[in-house]
Image (cartoon, rainbow, N blue to C red; front, side, top):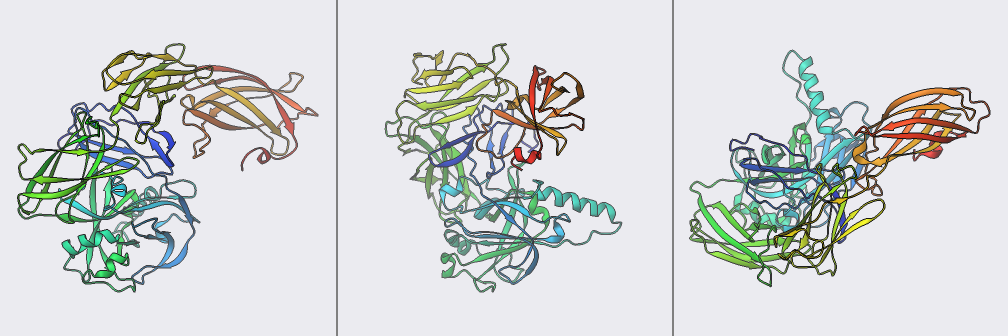
Length: 597
């Protein structure tokens, strides 16, 4: 975005699966051209995972490691439920217990907001504790709202709610509301509220005590609630929720039972909240005379090598200042600037560097922002380098979405294992530990290209160039995944034939023109159509591979034929023709005997 927050360019990144170290993750590795932008907002989404979002100041070199956490889907039917305040709801009650200290969450969606005929909702919901550095690294966007206020998070949550046929509930509710507005000549009817109950994480109790009731005009103790605007990387205020004790009575002050995880916030909000994947309980941190405090951090490992591209999190005593993300630059440096009340000349703060382990250090923020003293934080991690290359097909065209892997020849905790896919130009970037022997592999049908790499500033092995920070490998020629048709059966019961088409995922959609004949050569029908790749969450299907299931109706007299002949061609999205000349088996049973349905 530009300095006014207007979008100047959008780029689609490609996510590739990475399952390692007991983690269920998707990884995105791609260069991003800023093209004069002042602010960079990154959003990464994939079904079955939390989304990833960051709002960053645009700089020459930015390191991002987008890790999306797997979220288990739950299916709920309409029921009667009761919130912590005793409010009765007739609708869909989504309840997800905490896995740790982050707190439970309960969401009740009235029937009136859901499209008629909906029998179930499928939800992927996960709650987070902003006080836990492991959870905090998932906080989306900036700690700031659309009014320019900094925010102190009390608790935040991810929620993706859909109908059983995969339609986004937020989009459906918004469309339905628009239809009602168009149909009414007078003011629209008031809709029923979505009720959310959220247990307060114990570690956030200090924040509640320090910042207090956010809305003195309303009875009880209030906390603001926000939804996330992923386009701007900022938060929109939805309203104020009331905090309740376990017995369902509103509290007026925060007691010791808060640390027991017994306090529950309840908020009734409009369906607007369903349009956002992220919800947040925050206080806007407003200082009457704010003071800027700064720190200059240098991250290094035990060998005194700078640690570039390391994700960190800085935080202090609740309410002193807003927590901040940072990413160390190519020299291991990171500058921190925060606004706080006039506490004194310095503020003590903690820094967490998050990898497979969490490393915590202490730093001091000072009012000397012109030239703050460099503070060294030593972390037992290796230095990050990259390997760049390109893959092409035999005809010279880019090999897109092609798998590439980097592995150390000898493993050490903290070393990088990386797995990615090539982009639209056939280029790839994979991480590697600096000054360590690696094997970078590019897969092909007939062979696997394996390159010996050590990013140490000296061109050696299979390297074409070595800057000490990045190795460039020679362009490799790989075989494309061919388009193939696997015939299944023709069912005399369903009067349909079933075909399976396989090929590179980028080759879909495809089109077909087929002639169906008897074994004696008599033409029964000539058919044409489009072939769409099956899109789902099948972990057994790699991201570069495409599978399609095609059903073709055929109501013809086939006599006693035990087989049928299929001839013609399949054309992929790149206009490449694949001839078809095969035989299909005739069966006298339904097609569902040969599918998963």
